[in-house]
Length: 361
Image 1 (cartoon, rainbow, N blue to C red):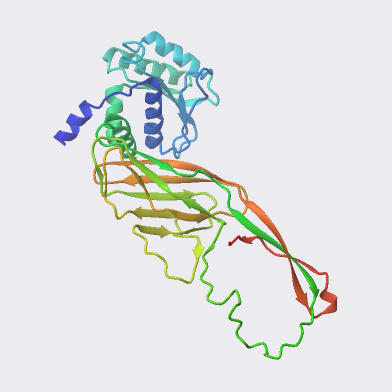
Image 2 (cartoon, rainbow, N blue to C red):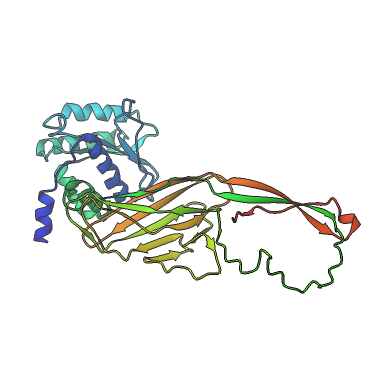
């Protein structure tokens, strides 16, 4: 516990106000259990005193956050006049706020905290929103109380010179192929008499000893890249991926072959019911500036345009991080026409439209 407090006291402030706004979004998104928390508009637009907003779980009103980067960024302190101005702006936020939070990288100030408490009571008496203030020391306490935000901030920002990594995906857009076949019935053609009979093996036939690899072009290949951007080694690492979207199947390969497959060097655990994949490489160390490619695998989506979100977690002995990939799928439907012989006169000319199928080559 003593070690933890020493780290907390030395936790650095974000390098700029944009990073501070992102930190507040992530922190209060975790506190409120609100994955829909959002930044308000874009830079340069009127924001009505609100930089970040969301609706906490099990609540029925919006909470707003006004992020004020101080000290290193703009001014040295948070003023009463500034607070009053932002409160006036927030009154016009639509829909009406239930609570307004002021967050600042400025250090705690008893006078300003007292002023905010008084403004809070005034606002409640007027039937408006509650008003609360969180200075940097308060925010640091909350960071250490909320694990996901702590891991994000400490690993990604504060100590990236020691342990840091970039996790990326090789492809973010896919163009799988599917087959749509139309079969037309034609009259059966009488073949000339074969004195050898129909049971003689044609040694030159294409099916004899056919060990050709067939590839399923309806599957999409996923491969993750890890780059060690820190100065220390990353050891005993793995990655966990959770698919969110219209995924029909996940598999280790996309081939069909009678020959024995080469054994994978990585442990790939596929949990199809949860649409999740865990990859544990045989390699257990990545040194500084080294790139490592996780073993590829495949997933299948329906034959229509769709978007898939992949939530990822990277875990190792000395570093961890998490994030998400967004990928888009634009399938191509290949139409094929063929004929099928029939001995029945009334079937000649009949057209059979088959369902869309996987495209094997």
